[in-house]
Image (cartoon, rainbow, N blue to C red; front, side, top):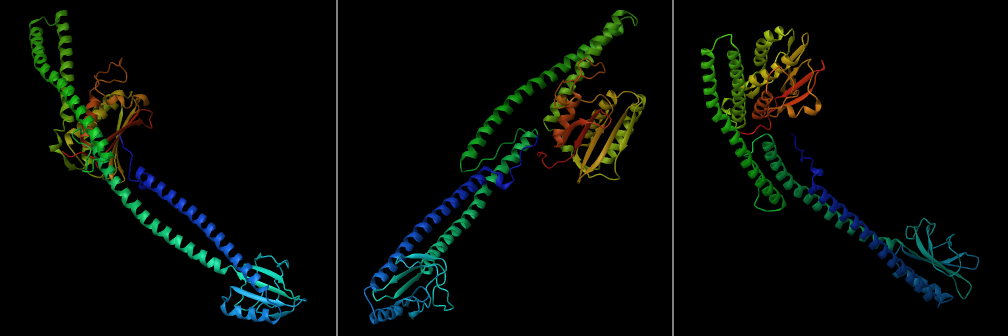
Length: 464
C-alpha cells in the first residue's frame, strides 16, 4: 500500500493557508493603496484648484500697470514649471508673462478647467502636461490666463505611491521568507510521520509515529494513532498467539494420531476395506499437519525471525536454478518453461532460501494451473536500476476482484478445484515478500493467464 507523498511543497495545508493569507494581505494592501491614493489625489486636486481660484480673485483687484507689476512680482515666488501666467489684449496678442498664446482648449468663461495639454511652448519652465487653467477678462478689457500644473500634485501622490510600494515589498519579502520557513517544519514532521507509517504498512507494528515537545495538533493526532496501534498490536498478538498455540499444541497429538493409525494399518490386511479407510484417515491427518506447519511457517516469517540470513546476492543464479528445478515438472505436464533474462541484473538483498521458496511457489502454481501445450515464462528485468522478476502463464488467470484476496490465509479462487492445496501457499509468499520489503502485483499476462510481478525495491524495508 503506497501512501501519499507530502513532499510537494505548495500542496501542503500549511503552505496553502500561508499562501492564502499572503494573497489576501496583498489584495487588501492594494485596495488600501488605491483608496489612499484616490483620497489624497482628490484632496490635493481640490487644494490646487482652490489656490488657483484665490490667485484669480487676487489679480482681479488690479488693473493697468498695477496688474502687470503684481504679476511680475508673483513670478518671483512661483515654482518654475508649475505656476505661469499670460496677459493678452482684446485681440489675444501677448502683452506680458511667459505664456505667449492662449491654450486652444481653454474656454474663456472665467472658470477653472482641467487641460490635458497645457501650454504649447519650448520653454522648459512652462507646464506642458495636464494642468488647471482659467481665463479671466480684466476690467480694462484685457485677458489674463493663469495656469497651475498638476505636477506638484503628482509629485506628492508619487511619493505616497512609492512609500506604499516600499511598505508592500518590505511586507511581502519577509512574508515570503516566513512562508518558506514555516512550511518546512510541518513538512519535515509529516515526512517523519510518513516514514513511520510506511514501516507500519509494511508489516512492522512495533513502529510508532514520532512525537515532538510542542504538543500541538500533529502531536495530538500522532498520540491518538499510537494509542490505536498499541491496542491493535496487542489484539493481533493475542489472536496470533492463540492461533500459533493451537497449531503448535495440536502438532503433537496429530503426530501421535498418525503414528497410531499407521500401526493399526500395518496390522490390518493389505487389501481389506479397513486398510483403505485407514489410508484415507492418514492422508487427512497429513493434510491437517501440513496446514499447521504452514500456519507456523507464516507466523515465523511475520515475526521477522529470518532477517539474520539476509545478504546481497545476484538474482541470476537463483532464476537459473528455479528454471532447472521446475523444467522436468513442466515437461511432464506438456508445458514450455522459458527463462528470459538479460546478461546481468541488479543485485538484491534478501534471504536466498526464502526467495527460492516464494518464487518456487509462484512457479508451481503457474505450472499446475496451465493446461497442456501452454507456456510458463520466468523473466528477470532491469527496471531502472532495480530487479523485477515476472512469472507469466497461460492458465485461467486470477479475476481482478480476487487479486488481493488470494494472499489471505485459506483463500482459494475456486473452492471446487480438486488439484490440491489449501490456500496457504500464497500467504507464505506474501509473508516472505513483506519480510523483504518487496512488492508483488497481480495482473494478466500476454498469454491471457496470470502475470505475477515481484518488484525488488527495498527503500522502505523495515530495520531488523
